[in-house]
Amino acid sequence: KAGVTQTPRYLIKTRGQQVTLSCSPISGHRSVSWYQQTPGQGLQFLFEYFSETQRNKGNFPGRFSGRQFSNSRSEMNVSTLELGDSALYLCASSKGQFPMGTQYFGPGTRLLVL
Amino acid sequence: KNQVEQSPQSLIILEGKNCTLQCNYTVSPFSNLRWYKQDTGRGPVSLTIMTFSENTKSNGRYTATLDADTKQSSLHITASQLSDSASYICVVSGDQGAQKLVFGQGTRLTINP
Image 1 (tube, chains in turn red, brown):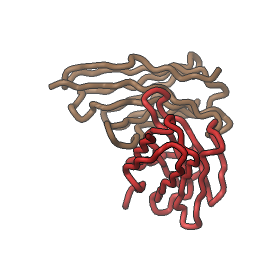
Image 2: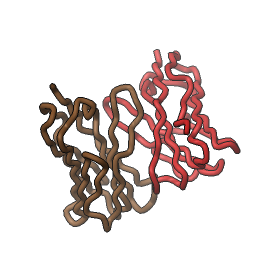
Image 3: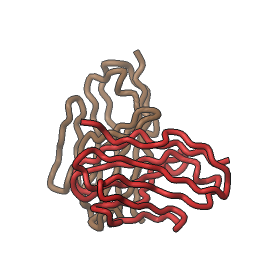
Image 4: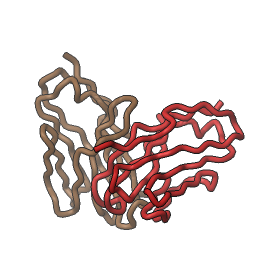
């Protein structure tokens, strides 16, 4: 069974640009959640999608948005990038709605904002 | 304020030795507590999930304990191996689901030969 995949793995952008990250969950998993990880703040929850609906949201500004498609694949978009957005962005999938059940993480997308 | 504090921040032990990592939390009400292992450059991997009624849960050489009264959890690693070198992250969920998801800063464990 294939694991969670994220594309791209690495990305370099400049301030003010926008970026879209993609996450393909494990087959059969309907919940996808997104996280930001930085050395200073650690792991922080962004949002979670279940059956194409955003069910939970963390404390991030509106520049961070996402969506989920009917095949459970999810995208995360960050508009008007800031230097502080440089981070590892992780997505995780689970069968049931998070936070119940085991989550399986992808390898992450490392974003560098210059 | 909901917090999760992990100790120590970092730990170095010799291969074959045992070690215990600590997680103290103030999240209330409590739903579940998870331990993750994260290798450098990779996503976290779930080790255990514990609910209020569970005191101990094992996953191979990893054993997690939970004391909901004192709001403390520990992760014990037996007979450490070089592959155990990683960051270990404690995550606590409140009863409002992911909106009350609180992460610890992690313990960086290094196993030396």
